[in-house]
Image 1: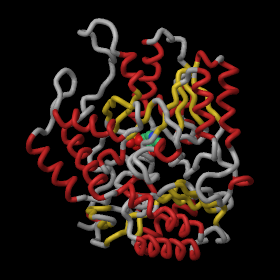
Image 2: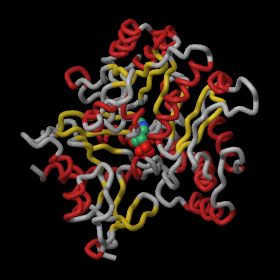
Image 3: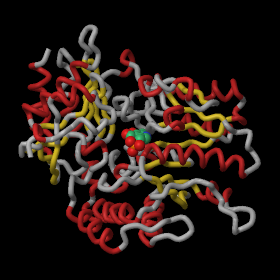
Image 4: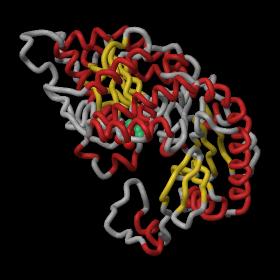
Length: 440
Ligand SMILES: Cc1ncc(COP(=O)(O)O)c(C=O)c1O
């Protein structure tokens, strides 16, 4: 099928310039391993692992087989009041992988739902302990926590908030973001500069009184805003301030969980343990939509009070713990463990870092940032047209270099497959350099 035969009008595309896209649609019709297939049959190398989601590669045969088997065996079962075996098995599996102390998980269908679920759990936890006055939530500028009202409110991406400004949930404050070109441009990994920015949490705790704050939510490595690794000592400081004031620390690990940092979870890399972890994407290797919120035992236990016939949390989605998604999740965990996917990711880090930083002296590049297998090349914007350069690179890569490259405005973002081949990675960046060289 050619793109010209496809009617593209009805699909209102998310986070896309619809009118521009529909003039010359970039349609993908297949995938296998590290490649997509374009509607004209051309193979495209994917530099973004889907949308941060498919770290072990597309259409992994073990996950495909598990999904096919499950959908023929049990296509759906509710998990309200009766449930399915796969949901329980996956919950055991991922809490077993999580840092010590994480005992339970609540299933959702997406990262956005995981975030809103985590915020509700934090509020409910304090209330259950008789601290219902803890209602304030703290996020961070440039944070991305999905697009539902809670996540959008604690998030700090201005265009995502702008149209809904008056309807954001009340009682939310933001810490400053950690990006600083003057002090930290072209840092490899975590910047040395910036731990003091965590003091913003102390400032907000003084302003509101820490006893009124329920939770602070951060991405351990900010992703969608263009890869901001945490300054050295920053997460430690947040943890310390949270402990001092009884505030829950939520790590939004929708991107970072399941190997993106060379470990199962960010605490395994940074040594800072939050109270709640949100996940999605890599949970099923992107195959079936699913998210999970992991909580420490004391949080789960706080809800398990009162008469046993009463529902402890009035929250859940029709598809929380969907059996086909859970089967995909179990197969993804088998792949990650059986193939050593996280170890493969860790071994690729230094090659990826070297390749990315080889762009540092390019005249159009104003910063390069990386952490684990997350990386960004930030280009200078064109005068009066921020974002135009990034989008042009995306399109030229797609049509001329047979690459899928994600741009967020003028920041090229990279999420290599956790099991990338070094030569493919090298070749893809040679092509990206050609495109950066030739565009305005
Ligand atoms: C840190 C973080 N939280 C939440 C989300 C939202 O996830 P979803 O698009 O699955 O709702 C994302 C998506 O990229 C994310 O990066």
